[in-house]
Length: 223
Image 1: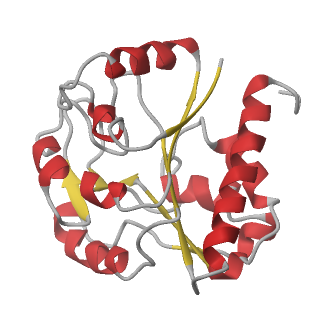
Image 2: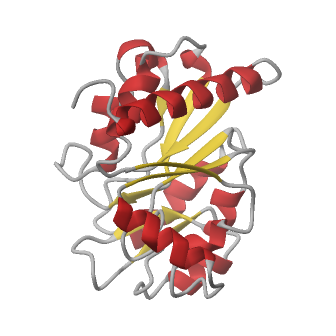
């Protein structure tokens, strides 16, 4: 992909706006928190953001959710972020993982919660993605823990989802709401159609992205 495809232009625009938001917050506070999502969509955005000039050594970066796999596993969101975002200028940022050495997220959740609580809330920016099933973070429509993740005040929730092979850990909806700015980063006509459907109704359990449509949400979409 050349640097002038609509998706590349979108990634660059989003990176510039996120960097500006972090700079604004760092002007009045010691540390700033950026929450990102995994998947293939944010990779060009991560690359563009890593080149932005700001006080990266004062930025904490964590994930909206994570698969309960080792940090060097192919499908680890932490690995994706470390390889694509924490490079170049952003290599100075501090990454906070959502996993522990425990065998299950249920065993590790309290330790991760302490880690997450200690960060600089409210977050400067939360960047959400969305799946074709309307999930965001690890708030899946078929997850047994969806109601808990939507209702709890706890920062993180261990999640089991029949449609997903691995157990996961996710920031709760309440914790994801605890941010100054929310962004939804999407590509493709299929996702746009799902978002359109989400906007037409209010059953959050059917399409969990709806939990974030009632707050100000900047939508970044390219075909």
